[in-house]
Every structure is written in C-alpha cells, then in structure tokens.
Image 1 (cartoon, rainbow, N blue to C red):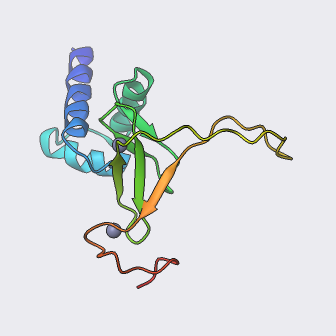
Image 2 (cartoon, rainbow, N blue to C red):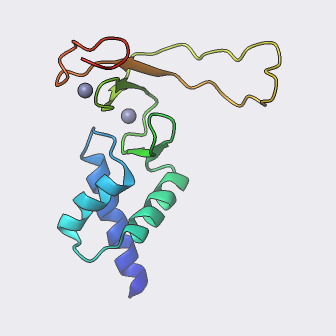
Length: 134
Ligand SMILES: [Zn+2]
Ligand SMILES: [Zn+2]
C-alpha cells in the first residue's frame, strides 16, 4: 500500500516538473505538488526528486543559482540565467564543449566545464547594468 502511494507521488512530481519550463527549486515543486497531494511532505518531495534524478528522468541543476533547480526536460541543453531576478531559461542551440585548461589548476582537481549564459529576461526589461542593479 505504501509503495503504491510512493509511486503515485513520484508520478505527480514528475508530471508537474515536465509541465513546467521554469526550472523550479525543490521548495517550489513542493508548493505545486501540494495542490494535488495536500498531505505530501517536503521530505517526500526531496526524496522523490533524488530518485528521479538518479534514474535520469529529470535533471538536477546545482550550478545555476544558490539552490538546486530541477528540470523535467532531459534533452541535452544549456541554461541562461537572468542576472536581475535569477530566472532560468533553456538554450537549445548547440554549443561546443568548453575544453578544460591544459595546465594544472593549483588546489583543484577539475572535473568538467559547465556553461551558463547570463542575460536579462523579458520581465526584467533588459535595462539592467552589469552589476544587476537598475
Ligand atoms: Zn529577470
Ligand atoms: Zn533546462
């Protein structure tokens, strides 16, 4: 019985995420999923997001902002972040992979390069200066 309920919760979380292009945080997903499953707990949402990430059904973006954001679109793509409000958008144009530097980087062992574009979203009006203040 408990297992069936888990599966349904996971399905609702997955469907909620797949219906969005806003790359919500776990807290935002929790708020949305609660409209459909009022008794779900934040811990359950976190656990299911981990499981869905582990099985490759969603993407966990841990470098686009201070919090982790989740993406229901698992096609290969890059992201753009609004420098004013932090909104995250998708970039589907192909971009060449960034090569890692040839020399060593003292104090670090490099793993991968991750490209995030920075811009200003339509709602923020494109009038921000480089420090993100209008
Ligand atoms: Zn914005
Ligand atoms: Zn995305």
